[in-house]
Length: 378
Image (cartoon, rainbow, N blue to C red; front, side, top):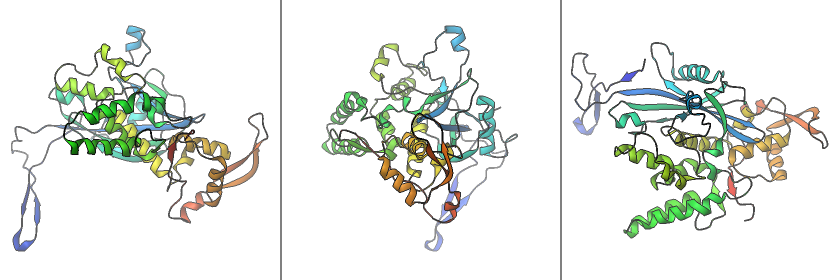
């Protein structure tokens, strides 16, 4: 059963004596709804994050698990059946949105979530292909969940590298070649498409802010959503063409096979605007690294400083200077040694630490530094 919400009525305002009064009018149950009203489904969506072997991982569900049995195809097609875990809010069953999210995640993946925080509400028109065909608008309340990579139902849920969806965001080894090879040339063509000089200037400024000017060697890691929005507006990611064709009635959800080569290397396509949700979550986590200790939610209770740095680098998409990072962690009183060493690895045993949770009550700002992605050959 899907929950649908309809507008209760208009907002009426008046301004006696120079003051603005706003009156909310509740429509009586017998009043007819306006002819142009559209039902709305409230949906919850989960960005479930883990870091395994220094690889940031997100959990994806297959909305058509029987496809592989029918076709024998294990590739990631462009039909949009791969999505973030999600489900409709059912007020007759769910006490709240978060409990609804936990219920759907357990049903679809078998996971029992621990750390969960609300991310953002996504409600753009036509973000769900069904709305183009006259269906209800889908408003998704998204959450971030931090966990460990536990086993899931492989038939419906799979862990995937976060950067396989947003490959331009991973600068740990070097500046991604896809930026110079495809993204920057495509963005420059997009800039030159408009004849108005003021519009060209605005487009160029947008490119410079998000991806860096010219052949820039660094990028602000927190602007991950702005980068995806730019690529979407410039028709550089598959979802932009998919949505445009669906709106024009040329295709319901998929791209023509001949067009897929245009998007090689530009990340795996997901259903609806789930890649936009992933980009939003990535920017949120990167921003919080500077003022909240979210990184420790992805670590075991005991860890080495090298493990801590690996998780921080996985989330930030940036390589961090080892000595500077350790000095920062030590000066911020974020960790303390537990008096034991790790026997893992061939080298000298590494000292084990734990997160000083007491620091949350000692400081207003508790975190690392704002990550900047820089090319190692800069």
